[in-house]
Image 1 (tube, helix red, strand yellow):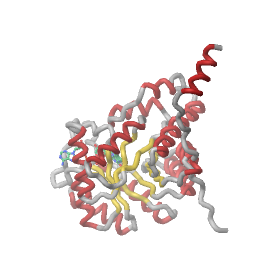
Image 2 (spheres, rainbow, N blue to C red):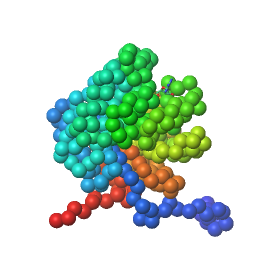
Image 3 (cartoon, helix red, strand yellow):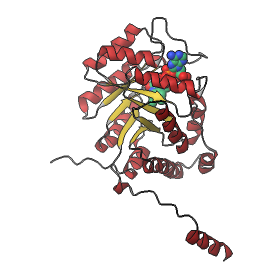
Length: 311
Ligand SMILES: Cc1cc2nc3c(=O)[nH]c(=O)nc-3n(C[C@H](O)[C@H](O)[C@H](O)COP(=O)(O)OP(=O)(O)OC[C@H]3O[C@@H](n4cnc5c(N)ncnc54)[C@H](O)[C@@H]3O)c2cc1C
């Protein structure tokens, strides 16, 4: 009884916090979806089922990753080319500097331009498997900043670059990392897409720091709906994304319960995007991992609906 009356009293006399705005009160945000190129026919079928399910949500663009060390060069190209040929979607091709000369990278970019691809996600790339540190290829682009400049010489691409709200793991410090982000923008990038993060404050504080540094392009939050907590945790340790303790607690005991895990994952991602939306964020990039359901549900919560096509 005490507990109830204390709670009531607090509710009646304490500060009132507003609820999150109803999505219907806000414009539908701009969405983009990221896929990876498939390794075999079965995965290819999964990818295309994923693309077809998300396509009606009319994303602003969909991007296709480039395997570590350029290992998926032709698969990335084939997937992007098929997106151009068979869908109304705007594809963005990821491209990295690793393991290739400038001429080779330029050649890939020219092939994209010739295939009608106008958006490139320009990245430095990670060191190849087994290498401890990143070493630029002799005669290659050293950093993403150089790649952005190279792309600008080839065509009038829409260029996205990566950004790290929790600082790139190889950076000396957060301020130099931010300087390098600014240099990529000054070199001609149109937007940055962030590494995924789970703590919304981390991203909002990063936005403040970007603004203070004079960065004026959109910093699109990368959202990772967590289908498999164990593997996301392992991957996060490598890419420098922190996994808050509360999340660990939420997924505890669900290792063999995919259906509850999916519901929890949707709730976590929905809460994250709704808080960001309530803070004025109106663009989201989803790391789909070629699985559509969580992304579809979260996009729906954000207000996205399938576009109705004329009969
Ligand atoms: C949205 C997104 C998509 C991604 N897609 C892919 C993909 O498809 N394929 C893939 O292999 N990887 C991908 N990655 C991972 C990315 O390649 C790695 O995080 C890589 O280590 C850094 O790439 P970057 O373009 O952000 O690098 P950069 O911006 O070049 O920075 C990398 C590091 O070098 C430092 N640095 C930057 N410029 C300089 C300079 N001039 N001198 C000295 N140090 C410098 C930075 O502080 C940072 O620590 C993606 C990352 C993101 C955020």
